[in-house]
Image (tube, rainbow, N blue to C red):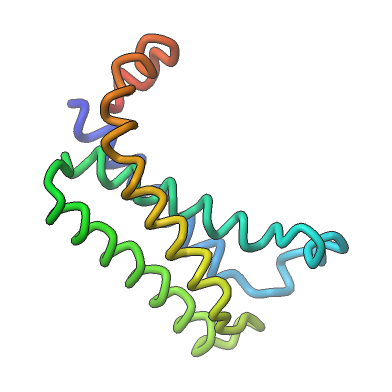
Length: 134
């Protein structure tokens, strides 16, 4: 039962990335402070960090090889989204900086998998709804 909840969350997050990154550019208001804080890049990094963590919890990633596979899948998904942005008439564009931010998020996610798995019992203790997911 726990795996179904965790799988749902991971799939929902994956869909959130695709849907938010493939929306027409006109759906977003321009941020005047974006160029200063690079909010867009922080968002990309965060989306892919959470993507990796959620899928690592669902797939029970333990070995170094499994972490590399998850890393490659995460990076490939980020590149695919950027290519789709460039090829679809959504007013969006391919940005190498987004791929770099996605990749950094994936790497940080993979590097934190072991730590998060060690802390999961503590997280479940203070966030009881997590027990239903993982």
